[in-house]
Image (cartoon, rainbow, N blue to C red; front, side, top):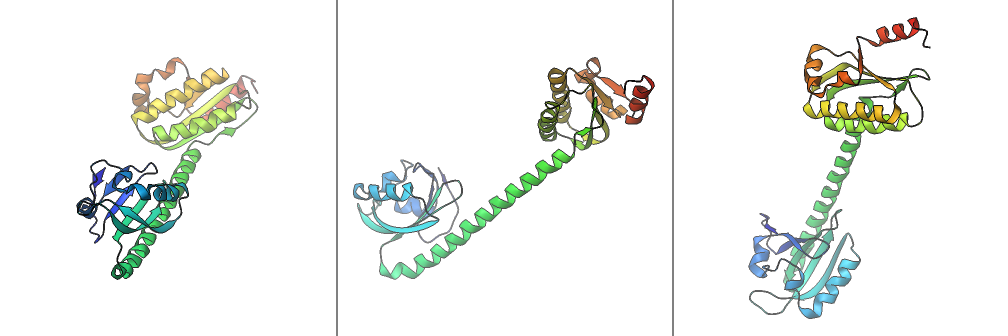
Length: 257
């Protein structure tokens, strides 16, 4: 429970779906005793069932009356405006019941509705951005079947932990449908290398070996990559190739395909 710096002329409280107070304004603390940290503690016993009914059927916004306990008056009638965000939290504004307060309440309702709409739009944009980033990670390590025995996974861009998590998911899913003799991982187009990325590469290689029993070949390891990969001792479990062309030529020469 935390105090937030919102300069509203009436009390404002944000509570979760269990009625526990998440945040409140100084005005709310001035009017109500919030020491117990729950909405129920400031509601008169006769109005608790009304709050429970409202919580049971959350609407986009709702307005109702209830008797509340205040610091100055044991029981006072309030107009309560409540709206719900996408996480199920309730934003509540409390207006002491008085006809002169009607215009103020309407303005605050309109403001709350705009804020709720903006909050949801930002959430949708975040979801879209996350989906786009995941798609970029997928495209940074495409799975390409060259022959019945050879598959090719070229890696592009920075080597990060999140990227390898996505690449590993799609790679293992594709490998489960086919038995490849050689799995080629091409590092030629890799840019910056992060520690989480090298760890991710190690996990990817060992998962492939455990799952398929095939032979993993690393292609295009430059001196910078070799230094970053040295602590993982990958050369003990994989072979390296200078280029895709050199590997294919050696296979052709050995009449393997």
